[in-house]
Length: 164
Image (tube, rainbow, N blue to C red; front, side):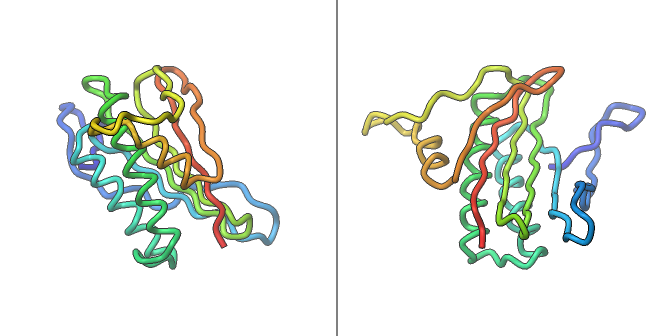
């Protein structure tokens, strides 16, 4: 659920995701398309983040069956699931930011959580384990990815991929 915690009685209420956030671009160049929203740190919130990303890409001209949409859905799903499972801090949500810069041929997924613990390097999970392969998937799908601290607390895990 998308929440807005600015209500006077501190009860979260539903709100529509923000439309487009301004991003500086060169004169005459089309600006990158940006979507940003906050989600509950729960498995349902992770699913909603993935669905919102796919819906926004469709609005931007990339249908759900397109390579870009499928890859972004996988990246958002994995990074959001990691934020919920490993980066969850009670009482804190996670945020998603999706940027598609057609002229630069680049898409970027950023997931922000409240934990300051960086993700592990992708490794090989034992065959009998149910989890542990997510960052291997991110590493295989993304052109590059990484993690950076976020002030005043938390971290941003990001992944970029070439489009075009």
